[in-house]
Length: 195
Image (cartoon, rainbow, N blue to C red; front, side):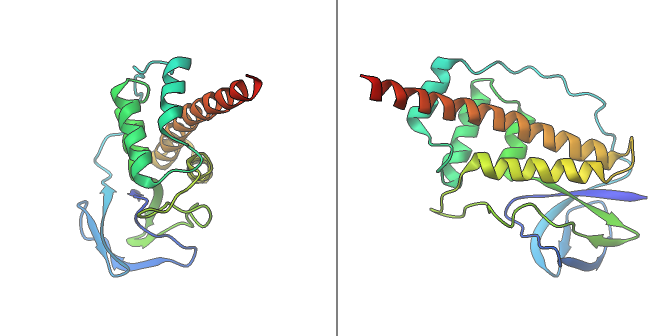
């Protein structure tokens, strides 16, 4: 039996990271390597078979308005979170996609009572802290690729594959929206040059 955990972006992951503690319960897990809580999904928790999408498409006017406020290729974490909030409030992204992007979630797994963290996608680029800036399209692409790779390594029909694919799907939807905002900024700049 394998239980899955979701790590937030504020938790560092390296290829050599190993958690030595044994899992005691399906509640938040504290480890010696981190004093942060990690959600452990118990085997008794049911996975949703299908999540109904109720989001709207981003219009070109809305993309242009957001492009005036945000440079998606050069944002702080706070700016990114503000953008996510606006997109959720506009109905462009779902609450699930908001949560995944806001938390920078990636899957890891527990095997035979020992927590084993997989190599994270966050070697480069990394999640910005404080006033640091990042290209969030590249960062989310890195997370999406990692989640897809994680899902591909799981057994067909397993919860791990479902979790990895679900997270990858959220990242891809976020990337699509950020690409639209980036395109709106590029179109605006090209129009200004032609005037």
